[in-house]
Length: 212
Image 1 (cartoon, rainbow, N blue to C red):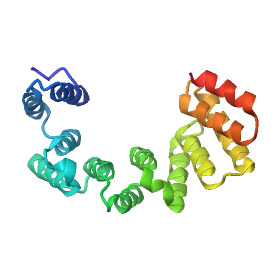
Image 2: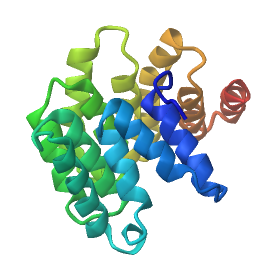
Image 3: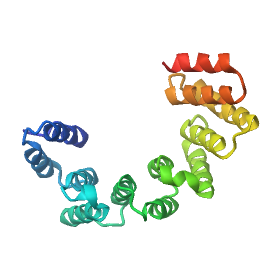
């Protein structure tokens, strides 16, 4: 396996297929990836996830990740390594995941990738003050036509308020998303939920048909 012409993501997907089918090639693929591109946050995360002991012990996954980062000679303070580590913690249900995500997003307020990823973490959704801060950052940094902050705002409105009024307000943001990106499936589905909350069932069906 050469690996020089394939991006890291493709090599990791190839390793995953080899592992799932018990081909015995994943170690060779990962070694070649390290030889060609070094140890990246993505490679370190993958090795942490497939470690035999990580499944039953989240702290083991973090230990493997930190060992891989040390081998790479990377600083633990860089945004890409901290982002990968935070994602690993939340995926394994680590008790510190929520606070680590909050600290990470607050420390890198201009890093829109971190802000977007933070909003996808389920445990974060319960901290509405933090979610509001992240939405403000995405709005300020994403430009007038950005859709991600509008989606986040709509979801936030629907999660904190079950009234038809909140659904009306959320629908306004979702229509703006659809205006910019008509093929945005999640926006149509969420807009259908807004319609249901307002009792507009035919409109809800129409949005679901578009989403399909």
